[in-house]
Length: 411
Image (cartoon, rainbow, N blue to C red):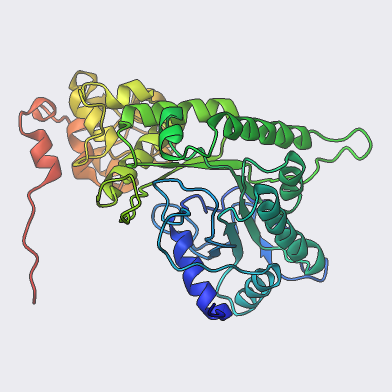
């Protein structure tokens, strides 16, 4: 058997980790290791200021401990029957890589996931030991996110929460039927039980103790989960419904949608397909509407007979075009709840409008300075000196807002 170098392992296991979506760092506790003589620090809003446009942190060392796995989930590129090159880090290698990458200013934290080798307890035990060595032995103060294994012993999850900023437990697929069909070795009830226990432990540790009156540090970034999109026939309405239940039941910080459709080999039960990246993007937008804009999941997909989101336009614009009777909205009089439903208005822009209109009436140019696209907003609002007239009900409004595709110049 060929002995792989650390560089070779890094190439294999960092590439294998790209299918893990839930690596954002928001919610980490503020921590500065200069006081303790260690290295690494993190701000309360995350590990650094480097985020991708979709909100994901871009400065984590994101790797798998191993891509060997005893499970044979049909949708997973690292399933036991998959013909991929395998590798496995030792505990010492992950600790050393994290510290060396940090010292070179390549990263500001660690996102660690793993396939399951030999047993869930053994694999999770190694991940916990990595986090413990970084925190305790090396005094590492950077961000740590552990992708935990729900089948492992509860005490391992509890230990993980002592060292990690965030823990995540994957629900895998939106429905129990999908999990049983495509990942028959995993049990949905075990996953839910682990998530419930983790929520209870986070809430327990958040209460100040009678002796010290301080809250114990335990996964301050909360828990998140990942849901695979496109591996089965579940439509977007069902996916959003599953997400709403997860948020309500487990107080998740985030549900991550992963367009996980790798090209399968002959042993896979899945058809050949391209990753549905635009569908993933629309699900994130719809999820945002439910969490921060007051939309109900039924509203978002109402009128779509197939239960799927419109891939050509964002969900808020789709809802506005289907409910034109609610528009135009007067930006000088409408309540916050209605302003949030105007396409092109974000939460910050709406708050600024509410603050400004206490002192003067808003004109169209005032609104234009607060939003990214005034062209998108104009048909749906009334402002001082501005009315859209019949534009709101125009037959070709959708086509006008989408715009026509144009040929890019090569020169």
